[in-house]
Amino acid sequence: MLRYVIKRMITIPFLLLGVASVAFVLSQMTKGDPLAALLPERMMSNPEVVAAVKAEWGLDQPLPVRYGIYIGNLLQGDMGTSFTTRRPVAQDIAERLPATLELVIAAMIVGSSVGIGIGLLSARFKNSALDIGTRGFALLGSSVPIFWSGLIFLYIFTVRLDWAPGTGRLDARSTPPPDITGMYTIDALLSGQMTTFIEALSHLLLPALILGWTVTGIVARLVRSSLLDSLGQDYARTARAKGAPERAVLLNHALPNALIPVLTILGFTFAYLITGAVLTEAIFSWPGIGSYAVTASRSLDYPAIGGVTIVGATAFLLANLVTDIAYAWANPKIKVS
Image (cartoon, rainbow, N blue to C red; front, side, top):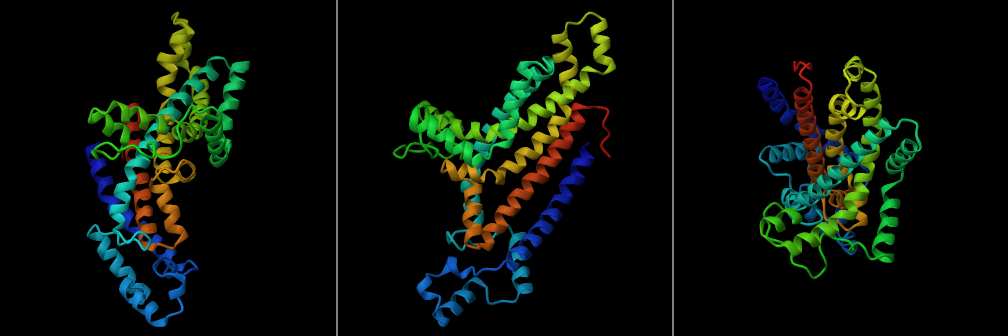
């Protein structure tokens, strides 16, 4: 296992280099002028100013030269400077990533726990009204567009019922907790600010529910099908023959085996949500990686686009590695080659 992990860790930098290269080439091939993010519109007609800005940002160099400079800086940990914010891309991402991680972790907790519970109920009461209802709820969560459910929930629970706070991570006049991890709920707990913790948690709950609802649908259907398959295996029939109640067969024998394929889905879902929570962040004004990526793509901010791409690729590669390790740990029959 250790040899396998080391081998995978060695290949990750080379894979990221390939991803960065492809992202650089594709971003340079898109139609559009990044000068729109660097210059006011009234200055675009001034050739001298345009030439000076191109020279300052290296946009006057041939594509191979720009690629070499980009990769050389990247190997030194420099993702470049954002055209939009005029700050290092690594600094922008470092400030926004904790907000996205906080939202994604909360969504995964909500989605996986509810999804496993729904899958259990559906498998236990197969083809009953409860099964049909829970499957319908799960299917609705994975089918309804996030922008629609987010706006509807925000209108109902915030505007109409006033059960949930508004958008953002805290109230407008609130002071964030000391920056320890960048996640407001955890930082508030670590610093002993319970009032701030409750406020941050209340702001986190609704977007986490919306984002987690999509996870619920995927997990619930997979758990149900895996449980039904496990309940028909010889070990389940043997447990029943020995007098084990159906609840014990379901929880102690079938569920541990049914959760093994769920590990793969959860790992890749977590990685996807790191950069895929764009709509949720936009609706709830959540200052994360997703909203940063949208701003970068609109203005053809090449360095920012490349930085977000690298973060997303890193998340997928690490999630794949962790999932494989968890798979081997959960199922000793699996041989890691």
